[in-house]
Length: 125
Image 1 (cartoon, helix red, strand yellow):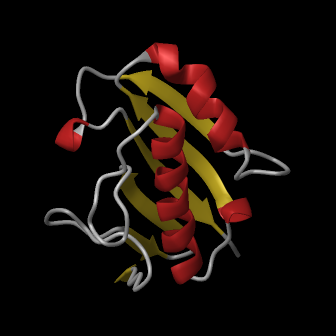
Image 2: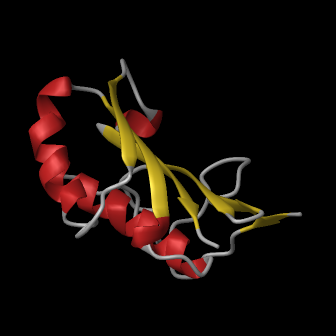
């Protein structure tokens, strides 16, 4: 049985999708951009934007009863591969033990012109 995640203190979907979808023991977190729960884009450097993205993911994961340690896979999309070390520095702060498997892909553009988007999959028994 699939169940959409309700995240009252987190980001709202900016289109026709759920911010997270639970299917069995898996939680699929939709790609998050640097948008606050109030719907404002974070303006600034890519590290501040990445922090907002990770806070969004954390809020969604926790609203569904998971933790960041339950994330088993993440995909990072960035408009510049040159931002790899800056994004990694912030991303790493959210995984203090075993970081999840991950892909990091440079793309030509992202929604609303943001420089970074991250999606995640969590699992727990």
